[in-house]
Image (cartoon, rainbow, N blue to C red):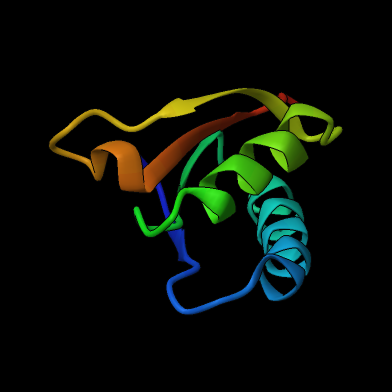
Length: 82
């Protein structure tokens, strides 16, 4: 897995613009796989991250990380190819 964005201690309103900037930066750097660490918490941030990623133009696929890479507290993202 490539670079990661840590969203711990952020609200949804703080996190979504960070995700957008991160995805655009990683796409521009020609990276294909990234991880977004949202933590476990109440699950609200994880849910909203998934909702956001599902309609983002740069996202090809995304899934929950395996247990060695963050499990429920992280989402792995595959970006579209240029």
